[in-house]
Image 1: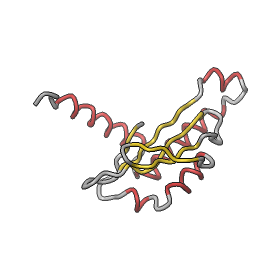
Image 2: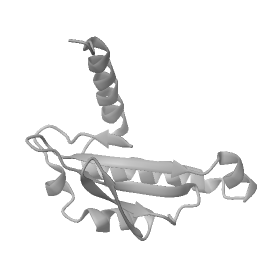
Image 3: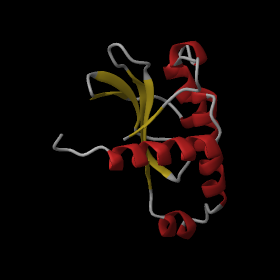
Length: 130
């Protein structure tokens, strides 16, 4: 599961007032929920795009901090998708992921990558035994 921060000064609930509808618009019908860090995230068991096997997404709520977008994209092996003659679906899957993440967080792919790098660097500088 990956968690994504919002753009500075923005909040997830303001950008996406109906998370379930947003997920269904991009990936297909929500079939249930799954608990993650005390929050219920939506699950799409049969995504519209054949590249995805299962998608879990939603708002991860934190007390005293801004909520984050939690997402887990489970993808099928590329060989299987290509063997079925659905290679074009791979490009559509990448676009769907990037568009969904950008609409929800207000951050483009480059901004999200840079943020993840900073987060990893911050973690590396913080000793565990202090």
